[in-house]
Length: 353
Image (cartoon, rainbow, N blue to C red; front, side, top):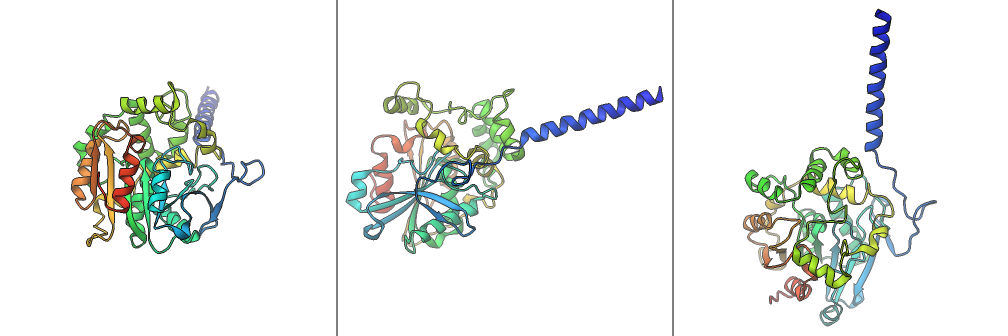
């Protein structure tokens, strides 16, 4: 009888260990398929080599660098890439002699993954890219949506390189220390339940992000599922531009964006964006006390992905930022008529419509 109990105990222990091992293995994503390596996607465009040997893929827009009066580094959002033309306006670029470079953030498109990615490393990637392309001592940074990591990071870590910054519908981290708890909880609960869970997992259990958003038992992020909590005005805009039923603004580019794998692109984005930041953006001091540069924050009051209440609080904490709240506009803010021009002119020449 004693031997039987010992056998049962050992069997249960082995089963439990096996279950833990199975669960652990399922939290581990497959290794990324690196561009330019055997079995990986091909390299189809220009890339620069960064300080640590990684490659960053980029695309250039506008007038040539050597004749440009204004040079911009654009930082794309979640699930996007260097082909994002959200602020590209051909006629205005020609008129004002604007040069812009966009780049695949690490793990996206054809840029090498960075498993150690942080807000700081993103800012240093921007500086590296600007130096490799010889953009000069100062340049502008525009960060859209999750691209705020590059914009806030630049304000914090490379302020001496900035001529100005624009944040467009920037994603907010609910755990920035300056936010009142009641404000963030109220905003957090405005999100669909599945997004509350996905964001919470990203912050509290980042090791579980891959499993959470690939398993079938519970709903993962609505954005990853192609059904983001866009406003009615956003969906109307998408229907007009891409046709009824289009799931995202860039459906054709999804394969390119994710070709190296999900772990080091969109899932790394969630870990960095909603994880523990090295600093609180609301503690950044005015970089341009003599108005030698400008910082703008643009947000739509119907944004369903980022509650406007959080941007209003940021604007109050940072009164030196020019805050633009647009009525009847959602998360796809730069795609609404006239907004590209307004964003560019306010940042570059201080002209407000």
